[in-house]
Structure formats: structure tokens, C-alpha cells
Length: 271
Image (tube, rainbow, N blue to C red; front, side):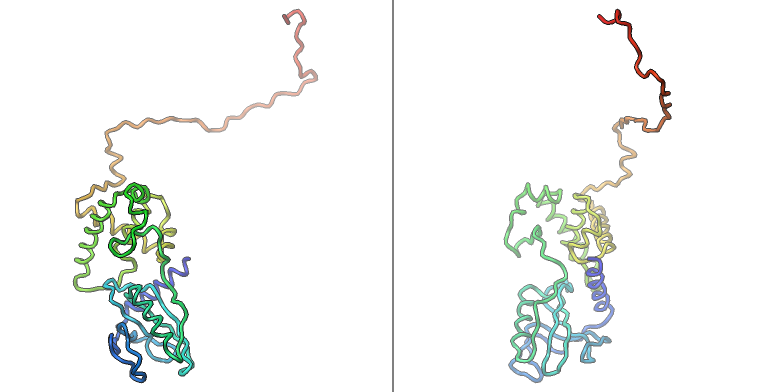
């Protein structure tokens, strides 16, 4: 799982540190095959090299988060090569359209895409997915420790801060704001390790740690929620009671062996 997370982090680094050139915008036709019309922006990563000695190909979708969560591998019989194509910020509908777009070609084929993070059955996407039983108030609170109303308020605060931080742009996030909050709640609620949580999202332990710290600091800064630290225990007015148990070892002399291990009792002493 750790290698899987590092693969996607390296891919993030490759994309973030190089410019994306869109040479075939959405709606344009293929330069050689006019019946092929691109359903999303298509281009390449500058200063990189693929199997055809050109830049690594990318499909750039309409999702504003621009998350890299899928790649596809293609076989081209005309060029007699194999390439990977990175899907950046593509919705599920766009991913399916890209998959069909490539397979509709006579000489190019691909298999089902490699996905970065598994679908999380507990995830609640308001207004974007079917409502599941996690939308029940008592179930959601048992799982994440907060009510749905509180969760939505947290998301509102975090997204506002995120938009403020990235007003002038910036690198693509490894985890969306909603996933950052889910990760923080899981860490606080279930006592799971950061490495274990990272496996849910296909990211490393350090990414989870940074996300949790950002969520906590942002919510504290806003002031809507009271998130006291561990130091509050030092000033707590309640009196702590302690029970001390002595578990140290003490030497015990072994009884000496005698010829008469049983102590005789006078018969008249037994009544």
C-alpha cells in the first residue's frame, strides 16, 4: 500500500512541477482522423517524455479540484507502441467518455483505468450521489463523532479557507477538502493510525498528517468550534483520583525440605 501511495505522490510531483500544454481543446477534431472529436481538453506535460518521445499525454477534465486520480494505458497498432495517459480533474462521466473515446478507435485500445483511491462506501456526497444509510443522523454521528449539520458547517469553513489560500492558484491538492475532514474525524474518532488512513485515500502518512493539522488549525482559527488541546488537562478543575498498585517483585524464601513434611496432630485435638 505504501508503494501505491508513493506512485501517486510521484505522479503529483511530476505534474505540479511542469507545465501542461493543451494543444487539442475540447470539441476539436483529431489532426489525422476527423471523426474523432475530443470530449475533454487533451494535451501533454512539458519537459517530459513518453514512449513516442513526446510529452506524457493528459486529459484535463472540468473538475475544479484538478485531482489526479486515474491513468489509462493504451496500445496503438499503427504506432506500434504503448503509452499512459493521465486523467486530471475528470468527473466519472468524463472518465467513462474518455474510455469509450479511445476504444472506439480502430487501432487503439485500452483496458479499464487504474484508479487512485477506492470508492468509500461511507462517503456522503450531498446532492451528487444517492443518499445511503449514512445520511441517518444517529449512524453518521456514531461513525464520525459529529452531526451531519456540524459536518456541513465544518466543510463550509474549510472550503472558504481553501479558496482564500488558493485565490492566485497553486499546486493541485492530494486530497480534496472533504476527504481532509473525513480523515481528521476518522483519526480523532477511531484512533486509527495515519498510515492506515492513508491507505483509504492512496496517500502517504505525511499527507494525512498535514491534512489533519490543517483541518484542526483552520477550525480553531475560525472560532466557531471549540477544539481544546491536551494542555487543557493541566488546568482542569476536577480532582484526579489515583489507585497505586505495587507490582514490584519481592524475594520469597523457599521452604526447607524435611523428612516429615506433614505436621502430626494429636488425636485428642480432633473433635
